[in-house]
Length: 405
Image 1 (tube, rainbow, N blue to C red):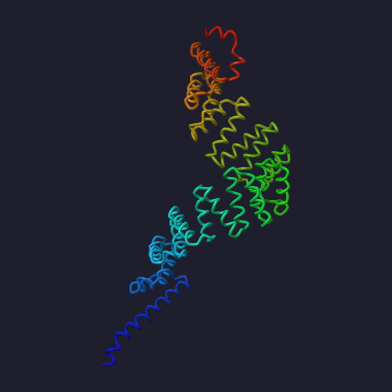
Image 2: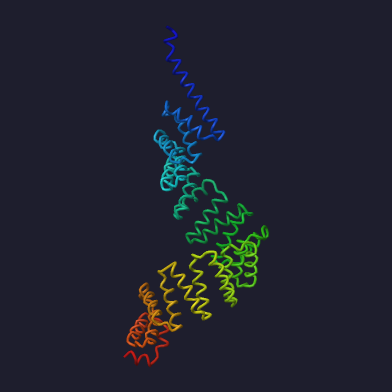
């Protein structure tokens, strides 16, 4: 009889021991990185103990390890619902949501964690990174500045300086980037961004000193060489700038900025054909970089290579149909080629996008004269005068005054 009475208690105790052993087995499998097997063990335990917080967390973590983010989120949901005042579960769920691509929901969870623990640096950091990736720079900056106050680091100084620069606040950017460089003098990325901030502020000599120092530690860093070349360009030391660009090209010819900045420098030295070649290399690397077509078109216009200019302006236009000046430039090229009907079409497009563009009225007026339509020409000339375009004021000859009466 005693055996019968003790049976159920023994069975319960035995079951509890079995479940504890099974959970321990699952934990051992996690250590061995046998996550799927561990999940099976934890799941068996949870069938009998659905509210077992430790096992539920262990299974959620194992789901996360194998990339089953939505299963992990479901487990973290249960943990959050039963432990609503524990910031750690909000952090874990935020991490899983972030990995699942649910960035906005992850941000909400990081916010919940911060409500429970306002000095949680990791939550500010993770949320700041999500805001940064989403282009919400002001929000990201707020979070990184919180991190800096709680525990500064060279990375946080850099991130804060970077965001200040993206928001156009170059003095603030330089302050944080300088702190990043001071904290980690051998970090070439920090030195590179600091020099960019100095250049934007017009402090070219200071930028050059910093770049020379950085390059003394790594003479073959192509990005630093390009940045020093650009700085030398600003200082009007064009030959030295070109020399840096040339060295950078030998090290890494796939770096697009080499050709962008060298082309600009070559234009300043009057070497337009070489600049055209560099824009060609830039376009080969970045065919969707529309400004390269515009810059090269401007050179072609100066060289009177009008067909080539029109081709580049058309390529730009295929990437951006809303820049009125492109239509106007192409129209003027057509005008110079005597393709008057095409010129009128492009002037029309320019004026549709910018109805107060006096230059377009003036040159369309010139085109109407070639098309022997003085009435239309006069309308455009007077429109240009009313808009204050100076060239028409200077060139409006007495004969045109007479024709427009």
